Length: 190
Length: 147
Ligand SMILES: [Zn+2]
Image (cartoon, rainbow over all chains, first blue to last red; front, side, top):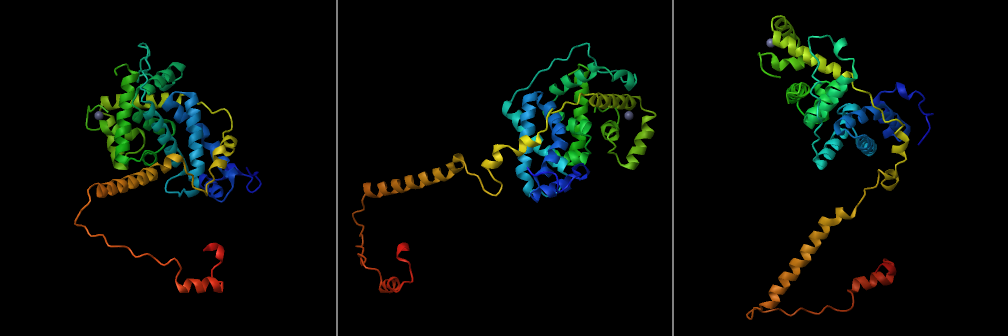
């Protein structure tokens, strides 16, 4: 790996600038991209698989695939959506191979927060994210992935369409259905 | 979304800021008079807050040196295509199939000889190469090692 001398302010570079530098042979530029995205990709995969070891392995696989594929990459989409696309494909392949549907029970008293109370009252406890994490593992993988991209990664519908290879209209309707399904599970109605 | 009114499909897009300007204004006007949409929107907002409260797990170490030092890079440089034995399987099957077909056709011919078939006698080639080639070899146009 080369040192950082050719460009001392890696943090100031845009993703696509790092990609161009890497395509020119600067491996440190790829290292910068890995540092930027490793935790985001890891969290996405972890919530998809619910297994830390598997998530770590898939994150490494994603970065390795990116390393080899970036040479021919052209910026039709952003680097972030492309990388999430690579990660999502690897993760869905893994889930399909396993064909294991986890059943994560949700305790009855963990009802979905009452919308009448304010977010400050309802969202501060650790219990709420445990409800959500359990519910996420029970919702269909297609719903889980699209909700994570929207709610955690805060991607636009167009970006989600790029990651999942869907039209914006499909993204819109799938997100609406996914939210409804998740709320039903959180409420103990599904 | 459950269809409790004609706007229920749009709730999710409204929350995400993905409604067009005119649709957004109409929906906001509708919200003031529709209890169901107001309640549903509050639930969607709560769900969003829940997502934001999820713990931020981390890899815990710098993955970059691991990726860059991965043996896969040395074993498979970017400029050289890699071949595995399983990638040769289709070629092997095709070759085996061709040989089998040839043996089968040959066996078919020899097992049922056509008595009326007249097989022309092949002429025996001269053991010596044509004159032009001999001249070329002797004059040094072709290195003898290559012949
Ligand atoms: Zn309404």
